[in-house]
Length: 545
Image (cartoon, rainbow, N blue to C red; front, side, top):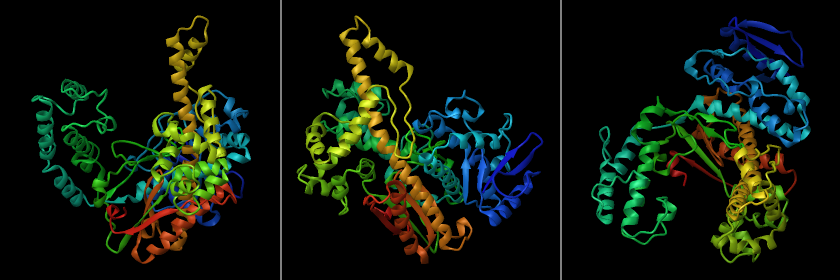
């Protein structure tokens, strides 16, 4: 059963059954939580609304959990762009208000704060989307909408955070909190060493331009100040410089200002953007940095008394996804013993585990030089279906064509500037420089499409993993309120954290594993691909690895 929620200019909410019993009812916004709670208990419907972030946070604040939804904005974006639905009226229609960014409503904005634009009609949009629907894309739309519920619940519950421990970690690493415009003592000490080694007493090591000039004046032949390039240099300044850059990242990303701005009442509340990256990966809003928590501060993420954190990450997820979407039995079997890279070595394709990892990364990200380029021919001979899949995706990208993930999310086409470069190189009288530039930009886009099919399908697997786990966690405590039982509190690409009562931590760990296996079956059927997890039951996040 589907039930649509919508608002009007009179500050009222309409509840419209779409394919089940009942009549449309209109009520004051304050009465909505009770009505939703009753209908949820009676019918367990799939709620149809314009944007989960507009409706669900306020329901959660009112103590109402919903089981399923259709997030029309998220589904619209997929149906608009997918190759599977390219022939639909929805995909061919002109842009409208449904394609505009959603109105961002936070918990402090009031219950179901209205958008200043004209109200949208979810009933009509749901009908358009149903007409565009094809069987192959239904799972992706359901998973994307479930992800929106997960993201809202993570933000509502929050990641347990000890601000006092965070401050201790910062002081132990950086020194006492500095004054405005000052560097922490440890960074200042390293800055002095950098200046001495480079003979540049007034150098500001935070300025890439100044730093690059100082390095070059000292005879260090580098073209950038990236840590990857600096790590290849043999010079006394490199040690303190890399240490300084690491501390600077910590200070900027998760220092005292971050703590002041993002931790309230013992919780960090990640603000995710579901499908915020074109591959379907999540992004994050604001300065919270929900998709990066450096290991130096994870010790501040501490379970409540009597509770535990269950931390799980999927081992070698993207290479396993490549094995699965290509149905390359050799690669599937290589990963069956647990360590895919060791399994590749056992086939004789490469000599060491390190070479296996480099070769696989080259295959997925398009590295054609160095060790990756050297190892690729052997990898292609050992796993022809897997390598042909990414090579085919790369060739499509180089021609400006689109590619799709397993469930149907489709890559964007290159922009107008890319097409102009290719057209100039194909014109009569094109220069060698124009042709070189065109080939370079074509290869760059090919690397993007090569990885899109893998990273995007991995994101789909992760969505299914979380959706399955969300259901199982709710069932573990017979439907207890979200924060009274085990609940998701953090997610980062292939890693998640559950906060749970200590006495059921083992059951939660098992639910995490079972959900991962279920996600694999949903996507790949009976293909014997395994997605092994590293699962740790800990008191603080820093203990997990």
